Length: 334
Image (cartoon, rainbow, N blue to C red):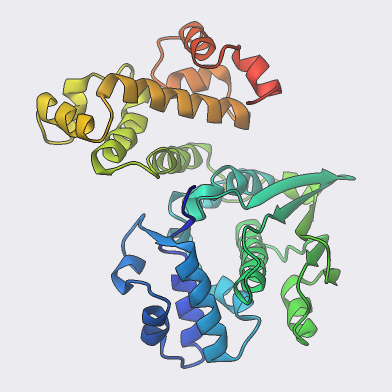
C-alpha cells in the first residue's frame, strides 16, 4: 500500500499562516513530527499523517478553524514545484485546471482531485482519503481558496466561482467565505466541489506561453515518473525525460551526464532492481500512456518527446506496450 506523502514545500504556507497569529511555528513543526530542514528541501516528501497533525496543531494554536483560507494566501509558484510555473504559462484557466488534475500526485501522491462537467460548467471535486478533522476541512478550504487566488492572479480579474460546495459547516464564519469566494455557497453538502463557468475557463490568459508551459510540464513529468524510485533510478528517469526529445538515449551518454562510468551506473541500477535498457523502455511506456490518456498532445508531439524517429515507430512501440493503438487506448484507457 502506498504511503501518502505531500510535497514538502506545500506546508510552508500553513506555517506562514500560523505565524501571522504570532504562533510558535517552530514548536508546531516539531510537534507535528516534521523535520524543519525538509520544508526547504526542493522536491522532498513529508508523510501526509504529519501534515494532518500540523493542521490540527496550527488550528489549535491560532484558534482559527478557517486557517486553510489564510494559508492559501501564502502559496507561491515554487510551493507547487514545476506545476506552479506551468500554471503561470497556461493558455487558459481550463488548461490550468487540467494540469492540476494531471499532476495532482506531485502535490499529494494519491488520487485526490477529479474534474466533473455539467450544463456548461466544470467542477473540481475533492476526493478525501481521510476525514480526520480539522485537517479535512482546512485542506478543502485551502485547495479551493488557492485555486481562486491563482485564477484571479492569472486572469488579472476578479474571478468568482459559479458555486462552491463544502461538506463541512461554516464554522460560524460564513462572512469570511462569502468575502473570499464571492459566489453562492453550500455548507453541509454531500461533496466538496468548486464550479467554474465554461466560458471563463476557455478565455485566453494574458501570460500564456506554450513553450514555457511545455518545459514546466517536462520537469513535472520527470518528477512524477521518479516519485517512488530509489536515488539512482530516480536520477536516471529524470535524465531520460530530459534527454529523450533529443532521440535515442545511450547508456554511455546517460552515465556521462551523471558523472559516472557506464559500468558503475549499471551496477547501481542493478542494486536497485533495474537495468538501463528496461528502465528506458519502462519510462517511455509510463510517459506514453500518460500523454495519450491525457489527450493534450498530438501523437507526433508524443513521439518526439519520447525520442522516437517518427510517429510510426512510436505507434508500433505503443501497441507492444499496451496491446492497442494510441487512438484505441485513449478511448478506453486501462
